[in-house]
Image (tube, rainbow, N blue to C red; front, top):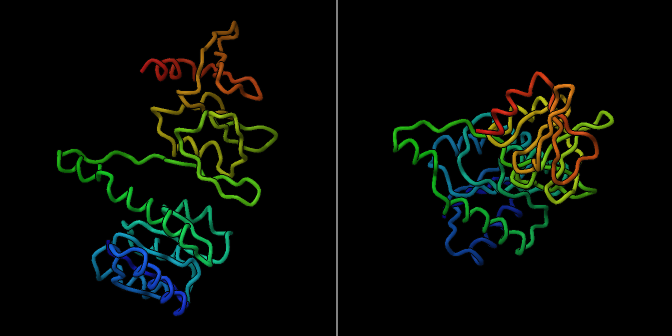
Length: 249
């Protein structure tokens, strides 16, 4: 695998290259950059590497500016001495987020995740070869905070999103709930409509969380979910027909 190191500290750049050379013989460092400008220039004139090790804070700005200037199709492992960028890093599509000083154990885990991605079939290329354009890519995970921890939660682990006391929450199938920053409107646009349905202004539910549905005299539908919700989950009357069609699809 080929790797690009984007790091503004020369010693840190050399140290990472040495660690890779000693512990990952199949990884070749094919380039380095120390700023947004030099990284954009390298990426614009060279084949995309398999992995990019990308420091967050560079000489002329933060690394997220790179994503705004060039399309990055490589696996990105972000590195930084601060944890304040973690959510932004995952939203940018990075595979992993490592705090400095980087330990060999953390580096092996991050590289292992890159290997898994590289080994997975390129579905966009496959669809293109079959003459079909790839469809819209929907949200694959939500990134939440729990104390000082940053936790990525896959959509397959999400039972529903709900609003309570002017805050929005994510409930997992295991019964753990996390406060989230995203609005219901944003989530509705990002989630796969085949798997999630917005039953009301304050709730988006996963198909896999629904146990049964009861029709009420008022015309609304009462949804029993697992795990049990902290409030009544009901389908607003204007959404009933669409919800039933979605449920039967």
